Amino acid sequence: MSLRRVAILLIAVVAAMWPMTAAQAHDILKSSNPAKDAEVSDLSEVVLEFNNAVKFPKVVVLNAAEEQFQSGEAGFRGKKVVQRLSGALPPGKYTIGYRVVSSDGHPRTGEIPFTVTPSSTPTPTPGPAAAEEPDTPAPSPRTPSALPVAPTSTPQANEDSPPVSGGSPLLTYLVIGLGVVVAGFGVVLAGRRRRSGG
Image (cartoon, rainbow, N blue to C red):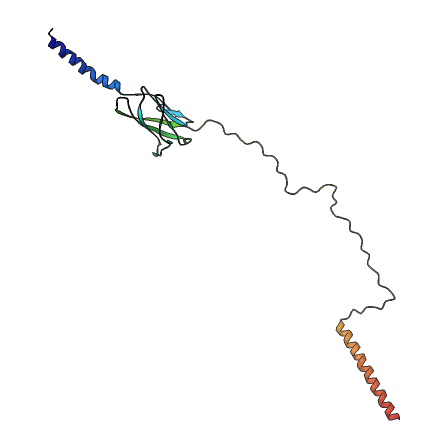
């Protein structure tokens, strides 16, 4: 076999293996938390693990209405990309969308659907409420229902004292005035009789 044919054969082998080598150079997603199509009830962060260290991660968490629930920017934990969430996720269907730059410089994107189910933790039921105390205390049995009333003595009218007229003051003034007029008239008559007799 000539040297020229060996060179051509090597070139052909390298050309055939090139797509496989290029594909292996791309970083791939090994696992995720939550996993694809998983059902979870409690979730505080999203973790994406790649086979190599990636760069410039961008992660979003969307619900069916395309509302976002991630908090801040994604960070690294070794070969893992960690994205914190803005709070507890309400039950429903969600999608993790990510974009990273692999070690060979090519961008890698993907989506991971998952579902949040209601928490199975039973809600504690309140115990029987304590009996409410009355606003006003009940009267003590020793407390009498009514206090004894001391008899009041009515002063008796003095028999020697003159009776008090029950009439009105106006009538009294009229009687007194009439008596004065009669007395004056008597004095005038008596004076006339003395003059006529003298």
